[in-house]
Image 1 (spheres, helix red, strand yellow):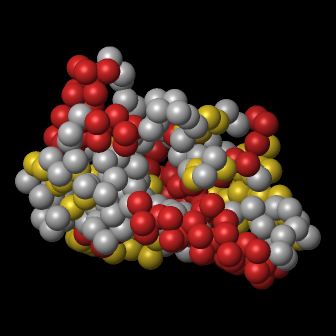
Image 2 (tube, rainbow, N blue to C red):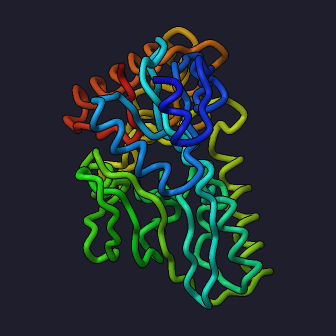
Length: 296
């Protein structure tokens, strides 16, 4: 199978995933595949369906909790799909582009609208998948269309209005089996210096309020309501500093779990369950996990 997989891109074998997930969970995959272009992705997708081969896509690993054992399938890294094309206010971007890079790149073309994303360590594909947002602005705000592979192996383009999305989720997250390839955004004109000032302010606020000095995967739970932050619910229960193994609820922001050094996926999942159960017991609120658990 190794030789066949090499036809679909750059193939790595028995790869550590520690630096490929922001929790820094120490785990491995049998195969890590970097498709070189859309056709590589499509051909691999059809091959995997035909062979009933297990695979999943890993963006920047900034919103996932990986298992602790070796993954005996193929992990796709779409980091070679990095095109950025400008046509006046329209920008077409490959899924492998980092959203924080795009936030600054559009400024060089006189555009604005992604200042909120300057501190988000995720890809464009992952940001669409989970409808990433900050400061009440989401990825779908300026999205025009998405190009993707359907479960039956066709490439399709859909406009934003045709794609269901909501707070921290989208059609793609709710319906596994689709692979996002690229997206087109329409951004308004902007003033570079004004945007840079906003970016600086946002980054300073993140540094002040979030435990960025430790490995984590950002917010653990969605907020139950705009005026009901999950972090406050967790904080009010006195759970800051609670730890299981090397996974700990941050003392800086209660909706962050940090890795103190050797946290396992199991440690993190156990701490998540503890938080969920305590919030449900005391407040009768069923917190929704924002991060995605990958079990194998």
